[in-house]
Length: 100
Image (cartoon, rainbow, N blue to C red):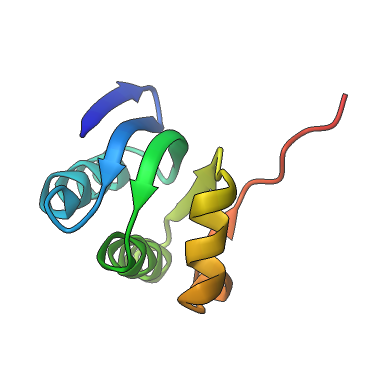
């Protein structure tokens, strides 16, 4: 899992699964310590599992309780499907793609 920070955005690249959740969780929390509003860009995530989805949901809830905001960007079909199947879609905010 590659994590690139660009301002308040964390861009993830690779497989987001149980093996990488600790590293990603630490990066998300560090980002939320620096910014009130943070974006988690998943556009280059090739695989995501239930453990990762739950970690993102917990991070979102933790951010909200601290007065911060975490938004998911670039959610491809596999990420959206996992959010739907896990019933976590209502617990996270997914940025809508801008239309041309």
